[in-house]
Image 1 (cartoon, rainbow, N blue to C red):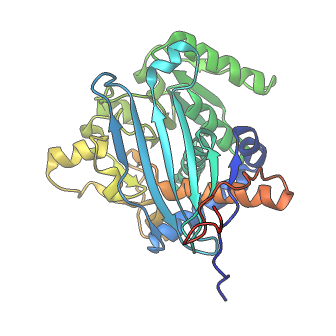
Image 2 (image 1 turned 135 degrees about the horizontal axis):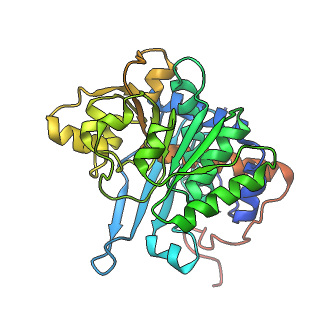
Length: 348
């Protein structure tokens, strides 16, 4: 039986509460992300194209709107509003900032606004960790390499480790030597007994030394062009989407999160489509892999390219909201919706 529609209370959930719910619950988040991929594959979601707000006076910056709707037991609609301002890094603040709005399924009323840079990083990392697990051919890779050492790289490493991955070696490459060594220092501080991270002098050196390559940069165009670097057939998590030249994808097995979303906006898969005029190089989606529909040969590189689905953010935001509500920890803004009478208030 559906509940009686009514105006829901409106809550504001800051980053500290988001982190409180998510940190330490990486396995549960990974499970939730897999559930949402299955809902999406079963067409129980609505995930329109992302909308990009760009600025003539700030060409490297953008703000993206990702509307989405998730079905299932906790059906929720909403909008992720995330900005990417790369120049922030030089100023000592994170590149990305975001909020997430959740809307009630029955009334459409917004019922929560959440700080969402942590949600975005967590769903990206959980998606990457899920793909790494499901796409590993045989034993899990033991040599991992990170190209790009920002927040996303840190979260991916966290999700891998906290969902059971162990590495013999962690390689690092970043165009900024300072950032590379900072990331190495961070990793070294996590476990005093762990082998030290290896800072590589080039992307080629890192790729050739890694069985699991994680691309987490802010590159706008391909900077990795030689398929020979991947002759050892590694698993590549193409998280930042634009690092790889199309020739590399055409020599690999390619899995994406969503074909229509991923093949646009000059991503590496989109460039491969433009070069060939077809999508034959796409083996399938991660949902296809979960359903056992895709063969994963081990005689070529395997590349996972996730565009990033807004439905993941919505589902994770709803999970956070419900956990805090169960704890009695929601900060509700009383009277947020003021005009609730069709004909106004008597005597006003």
